[in-house]
Image (cartoon, rainbow, N blue to C red):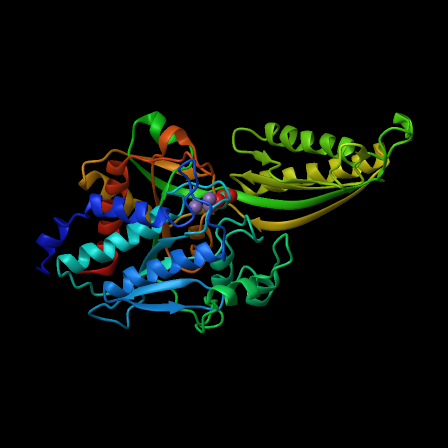
Length: 420
Ligand code: GLV
Ligand code: MN
Ligand code: MN
Ligand code: MN
């Protein structure tokens, strides 16, 4: 059935897609209905094995690169053409949901299965990618696998990153058997794609609020992340008078407040979050001697993001001036706002219209592997709504019909690029 007419009538199997998502979500399932499957843990290894097994059953070959990115490849009639690729990540936040990332990978698998069930031969090969450590929760930087792929930072740098217990990415990859032999970066010889599409839940409320099922993602906010350490002096909570303290937490809360103030001063696009705080020694009757916390800044244009950076540095300097503490600020992530490929965004709009779905242009507030892949190949993303706009939360949910619709748009966008 490899004629153009029948190919345009192809549709994914929504029930099968849903079942794959539910089967994958069993690995690391939490009591509240979410998933805790941090990058490069044994659970991540099990989920990777299941993905590879499913893809091998579809006749795909599996390639694993040096940072553990997985590429399942379905050959094309002209196998020398650059692959038309899709994918996302299957690591989750500690209190993550079933859909963030997992949807993009399972939608890619569903494309493979649909092509196979209908005997469709594409001209270009199709690849489905699982990118390593997209979440950046256990290991920083975030979007690690795709960051190495596009040479934003080196493989050695990524492998040397350690989690809070001192376990390195290199050790964690070896432990789960995903330190692969393939070149990890385009500079080292990893193949570039002919096009890359990523399907994802929106992770915000805009589509749901508008009652629209397909988001054509035109770009993504830029991000700067920091590690901040405020140092004071541990001392006894009783004998030390208030005016003679070097209370690191009291000082740190002022800087945390500034993070929010800075974001509020950069509306409508600025975002500022303190998501992680460690207080030392974290004992009731000890004045905190050291506080480590994270800052996550986002903005739709680079100048805005830079202004937020300057404001944070100034606030840190003022804190040292006004409080008896030291402040160390280290930027650990930076990527500029990205605009996706206009032709591919158009293909998504067209795909939505053809499948009878309204479509809304939208900018992603979240980071995605597509942000990095876009530096190496034409790239675009497809968003579908998630319930109440909630993500990075165990209660994350999505409508099976919306997931199916997004996968159909993905299928046809990929077919259009791959050629049939
Ligand atoms: C990735 O999950 C992000 O923080 O945008
Ligand atoms: Mn994600
Ligand atoms: Mn996420
Ligand atoms: Mn993400």
